[in-house]
Amino acid sequence: RRHNCKSSTSYFRRCNYWFVSGHKCGKVFCSKCLKRKYGEEEPNWDDAKCDKDWHCPSCLGICVCADCVRERERKNQTRGGRSRNP
Picture 1 (spheres, rainbow, N blue to C red):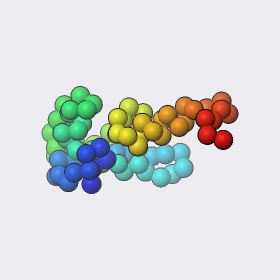
Picture 2: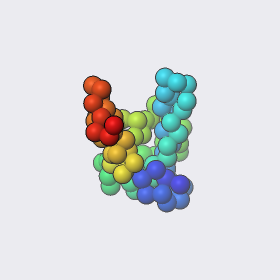
Picture 3: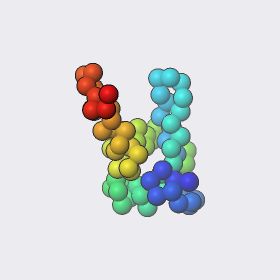
Picture 4: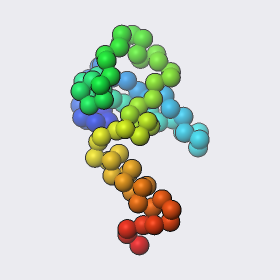
């Protein structure tokens, strides 16, 4: 299942970002969402599946899905020791 649209397709990219904790992101984004929501051009898919340097919109902090937006808002609210919800 894809991160944004939750669809199943064979045209996707898997994130290769490694967190400091040693865990790999691994989120998957389909070609349609990458093009429509993030303006990424469709790559040569044989090369794209082997691209070890590609980082997903979520890891770049630009993902527009509800979960990522909510997580960014939560982090911004708690930054500096302030939290809206005690």
